[in-house]
Image (cartoon, rainbow, N blue to C red; front, side, top):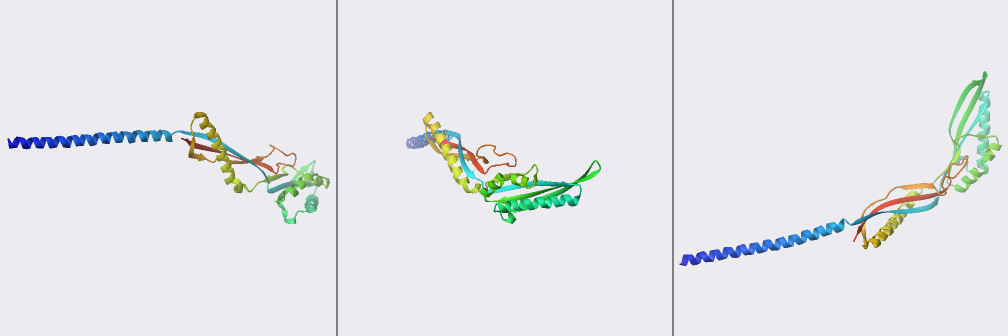
Length: 244
């Protein structure tokens, strides 16, 4: 009879251990299921986002002007063509000196000689290029406005002559413009969120895009003027925002 009593105690102990284990397993499954469900919910919330674009524009004035002056002289002798070329070069240098430019602002950038015969008579053509480079935009514009004074002085301007204006300080305004474009993108995201009954969270990802510099008023210029000093800088950013 004592043995039966001991066996009952053993079986009772085993049942208690089994029930405890089953209880722990059940609690574990419940907690695990809750954590899994909460994790899936958070993952689903994390997937809620909107991608928008932001724009920033700024008007700037070029700070570098480069004028390429292409001109030529022709004669039946090489010496005659060279004499005419020297005369034109002197006229060009005098022209820019009268406008207040330093002598080193104007530099020769290339020359070539072409020789052929017309009705048996030799013809020599000398072509030369000079380049004006200056940060004084007002003087550069004044020079362009008076370019036909060179023609009156006998200088034959060829195709390829023209002023180009460049804005070189883009790096100085990049950070502010990127911030403006991002702010503009957030406004678009907030409007989308308001329409869909949600709120805008932080930035999930962003692409800066590229900066473009174009003439402020479109394709400006004319003969001998290839550009304008008045520019418009533009950047478009693509931003992906979380939605709360």
